[in-house]
Image 1 (spheres, rainbow, N blue to C red):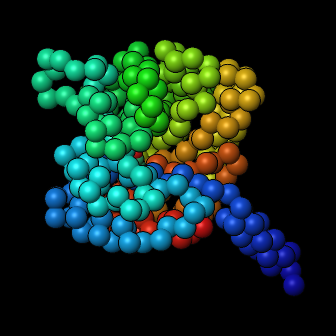
Image 2 (cartoon, rainbow, N blue to C red):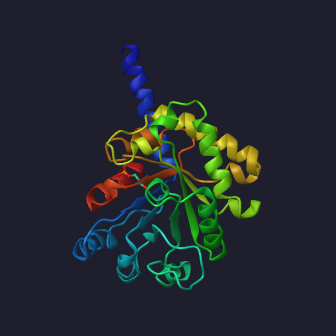
Length: 270
Ligand code: 13P
């Protein structure tokens, strides 16, 4: 047996040990996709599927379909959340959805600070921090997205930029409430491009973010905040990415649209 074979065997054992013991958050972000019929058919496929007890499965559909999730997932352990809302209780905000409305439909999670909302809709850290605060007040878990674009990536300072997205996004909540937040690192250059950050890039960044969280919020809180990776995650690369240190789960766009590939991702991480 040569050195390569031995390395392969050791790697396989490490992979199996990690997959067996670590639980992952698997979150699907559908963005602005699917028809009512497609949503119904997806829900039919997953409502009766046994995802097991280890991983937590969450889907964020477009808001008009939340009522179907409430109806069809009543007896399933799949949870769901919102992609967006407006950070006010109620009022004259034409076209907007409030957090109370999300709660009415059973949402337990909401995505905030996604790069598409930051770049297309001009949401800044200040506004995002208001969204985080109202979610915490209403007992909905914020999934705070951060991520750099390709130009920023070329600049060594991009790590500091990401840390600022976290600290400014969380500036309106107390230290204790920080423990209720999920953070998702989604490099913009890897979203919907098919180009994934390599496991070593993800690991390097997640270790940096973990260190930042521990320093900023204390080790009790900082060490346990879930840190997800997102950006072209699919069945073929999720295993390697899951092995990167400090990866607590995944925020998945394209590959979460198809029930088969979404289920496959969970199977791989089980
Ligand atoms: P893709 O998985 O399609 O790259 O999307 C990632 C994402 O933006 C999830 O929020």
